[in-house]
Length: 546
Ligand code: NA7
Image (cartoon, rainbow, N blue to C red; front, side, top):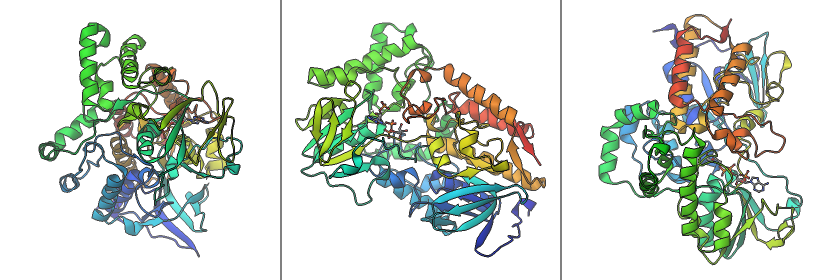
């Protein structure tokens, strides 16, 4: 038995549970990390989860139309061939309910739930330097100590509810899409106001409009969207995903975004306008995020991107019948895919319904919420239900909510007050033995999530195994290495068109007062994977062991 398999004797003190490793969150990240540390390394480990079940982001995001934009055969764990053979998705893109079934299937197959404590929201995590332990508490008063603390809290789990004056006086119902009631919301006969036209709002609006008496969409920034072309999977496709699993995994791990398709080597400006039109038309008909892969230079060359942007704006004008609504929807101020590109089912078509209206809140900002509606300088729009599809305090928000305090009383909020300063998105100087799965500075939201998660979890697992095999008690990112990584993260973003979207949550721009720093690593998942592997091969270069 390798010594990494030996269980640490757990010192227990009254009311405190001591662990080798504590994981926060039981979404894809937390579940796989639990499996790796418990079953592969033999550690004493628990996961704490605020929800009453596994699922992470999908546990909370139950809004109408909630569906993954990654194709189902790629929105899967690839670490277990057996799991890949046993699980079968039914549609091209998995809906929220099916993803929840998948998450529970995984949890049950690997017997994970016995080590997940549900209904536990972490409210503080403090590093005790003398003991080299993290002291973690939950809202319901539980206490834990742990050598390793690993966050799997997701990038998009802290709801951004804008501070609009008067919300507290509103007599109707209101909901944020990211904490949707489990029993659903009945829109029948109701006048609904939806604020926000990101990926979520674009999925929700068609479904709400089909049920509600009336839907008013409040748009601040017009957005591109590509038809998803969702459909049931054919038997032939299902069979192909089983026989070609290894090949699909290789493709996903070799591409910048972790999706199961390659980016074309073609350059947009090398094509004639006719060739471009034909390729864009084919990509539009095929549907989904693959549109972005039509040309290699789409995300690096503004003139190339303009060709795609113009094609998509023309599509909007072609679909939407009312000229003023079409103008507002196609008046898009940023390059295509410089904000997270939405994928939809009948989004623009929804504006052709008699019961749907669009309000431009860029020109006429929301001033307040009254007892009966949403108010701009154009007057009140009466509504019975308000849906906030207003996104999240992304990436740093979920970590800040944990109240993490590292060495010498340094709060994470303080350490990252000018923006996240993480080495590889995995660790931060001043926070020993704390790992952040898909943390800021890693590809995370720019990648198909399960691909990013598997890489991070496996890297963390190998690192902990290495420490245990070598009797190392502490790992901490070196401050200089972290600074260099932050610089590299900025360079990687600046080599693309991504920073040109001034209202993007990638930049923190959606949350008033948040520092404008490009947070995810835009250098590509495959490149990032190679960098992490190289760091480990060089004895964890840039980390300090003690
Ligand atoms: P997003 O993409 O952040 O979209 C939020 C939307 O809400 C966006 O249109 C915002 O406009 C709008 N918003 C936010 N605050 C306001 C206020 N105060 N007034 C008017 N409109 C506002 O969040 P999603 O939930 O759609 O998507 C998040 C990710 O989940 C997605 O990218 C996928 O990765 C899955 P803005 O653009 O900021 O002007």
